[in-house]
Image (cartoon, rainbow, N blue to C red; front, side, top):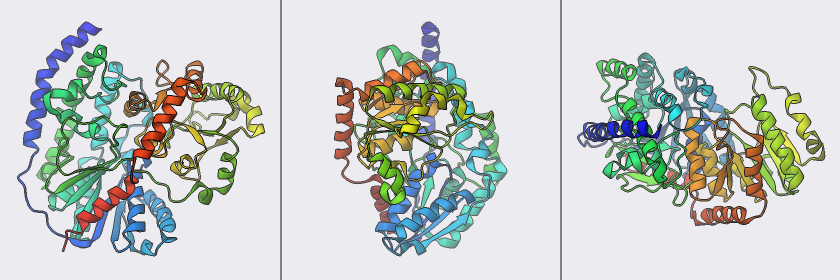
Length: 518
């Protein structure tokens, strides 16, 4: 296997180096002055999925609290409206700025249905054996809409921009129709991303280091990449970039959009587009891989996380329960569904943990619906602990996860490796036990291990869960031994180094950009 990897990697290095160089040159536009809009008006264009929109919700919440004079317009899909109402309600308790928010309903379909790719499709093991899935998924996720839908959404946002005349447009990195609209109108815009810098600019770093220095998506390589894994990383990164460059489906879509007047639509290499564009992302020193060279017009904020109020205010009864003992929070994301195998493995592991330690556990479990996961599959393993109150099982958390982490009672955050979950734990100073299943989550699990902030709980079983392996990971993080103490200390030290909340930094930057209007 290794010999073939070396052959593949050698073949791709030269090709990909040229491709990256060509795209960096061809994607650069001639600088043009931005059309100035109203200095008190901001337009957000956002997807509705939690993993994509949490950074926007957090930033909007901060704007409402700290910049009450701004007029905020939000263009998104219908299901996002209730999330906006929630943060507007909580922000309104501190000032009356909530009246300055106007919601505009984007024409569908939403991002998820547009992909026509069930999330189960990217529940795969990490590494080379899943590279085909990685490349196909990224092509779809970066621009999932049909040409016709993309054009309709573009035109809607374009008309909204012309009508509102915003000082700045705040964009979702995965809502490309809106990004194309802001650029076609030559509007100052800020791309607000849940990613870290290495996710976005790793492939454009000097000396082709995007191939050998920065872990490829879905590779699960730690940083620095071990010498034994460099060949594998080169191959995976090369395949990834090659697929983004030569994609017939996207090429036909781009031609359709070009024919309809869009300039350079759906380019994979222009997320950051100075001087009209600014990029804001939640990169955090000692929790993110540092770049060799950071492009201009980039703001790094630290964790951008949402907590509209304390846990006591959001769910007093749950907060009271958490006060009883050191708590383990298990939250594998809003899309994760437990099948029988995963539910049994988790329950069996928790049985051992609750018998051997003094912790209590809050377990959010969203069961499968097709086929239906019956409680009888896993409940007998932990029923005694549920009755005693040491294990609390919920289908949904009524309080923001960050607010639970900030109570000071959580000693371990068990999550799936999503960017939001990772940064929430970083912000709160809580160590990680990461159980990734989706291909885009392995790298955050590797970050936790690279910076000694936590461990991954399914090195052998991924994308599944093994009771024995997971139990070992739990006990490593809870037994009070040297590794446990080191990771708790590192997590707390890192949180103390974060001077300001990332949402406030992001909000201040967007307000600053908006202030340059007329």
